[in-house]
Length: 210
Image (cartoon, rainbow, N blue to C red; front, side, top):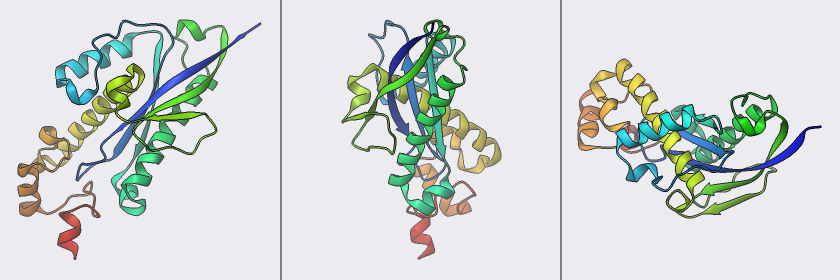
């Protein structure tokens, strides 16, 4: 007879502020007690440290996550606040799908059980559309390990995506700033204009269109 496990997930997003690229969210679960004393919000870690944590999570049999992504075109259509909500909803649904279709076969605690998300701990103040109970925590990624882990996975995933965009649009150097509005990025926008992944409703693109 299968046992039932009720799981808590941490949810965080990355990419609300950039001028280019998607907003991306992660819903993260740990199915065993891990030593995460040194785990911190991705903003307080170096790129090397984030990549090390990501590799650790990727290889651990009792860790899993779902990713949700919303493109720059959808951001322009519905606004960044709604897009962030949608990204988190997609991340949770992606994780639920993995739980329900037994795609977490590596997770030792799930091999002989049915599992359900019992609570979402969401970094920030934004609640999402879901039947799963949820709790928002301001600066949750600095206080709660699940949210910190979600922030790391989201950040590494988005950064790697922006590296692929850099290969397509090298003049903007997305490998340097990942789409954020650095001085160099603004200068390249003035020189070349926006490309396909720039958010047209964000300044300075919006100002240029007025």
